[in-house]
Image (cartoon, one colour):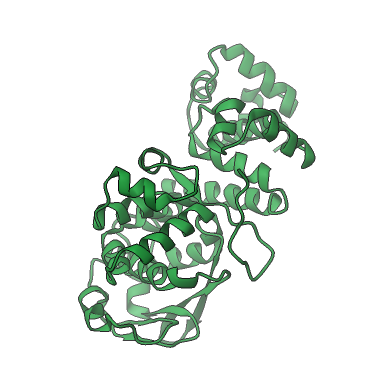
Length: 348
């Protein structure tokens, strides 16, 4: 199955979105298994996939959301879903934002790494004397899903601010890039600061005093580790922007932790045959083995540089049953043993 992306205003590849959003939609309406399968329409996904998989292709989520909006009369669905989402709903990015030293650090991180979570929104953080304005620039035509997605996005921002600061976010401002909606009277029940409509972008004005409050979730080790992980993810996205199949494979591999799936399982996850996947990767100048080996190497280097795990423990973490095999492979890749690399030798 080849997924066709919605229209994009710049050259990019829209790939996956967390299934958390679909799960919350199903819970809020609520939708049973048969109704969920119907809403998924012509996609290859089922209700079971939504419950068990970490992500879904964005075109499938977009069509699912369009069908939900067309079929269900609830005009408050975006507000209800957004109010229930917590920062970790954003995956590694959300966890990193929570453990930042201050909200100001979190906003800077979000501006840099939002493409890791969503490819069709760009965040522009404008600093000024009174604080900071977060502008969310849409890079795709969201069509009739726009209001839902903007409501969820801005409520997630509010939930992050209040989690980090421990205060109601009642001295800022929310700006919405659409006219006054029919349900505008309920917005104050969800948004704790005033709302303004028909703005150029979706935006949040954050006064300075919120930005400098220390976060109770600050963890310097986790903060540093999340930044390294996000940098690696963003680098992968940039490299493979013109290689969609390589990028999709890396997406699947990154979802699975350190013990990586075989090529057959990965192909099934992408709704294609193993032969077809291998052909597409070859056309992009790569292979499943090369992508898998590179990811294992990156993780091995990370554990050696940033943890105190023994070499054998790292080998086990990466799925090696024969620890000596891990040492041989690492030396072949890097030109030195894992211990020598940890001590500052080899190609870093």
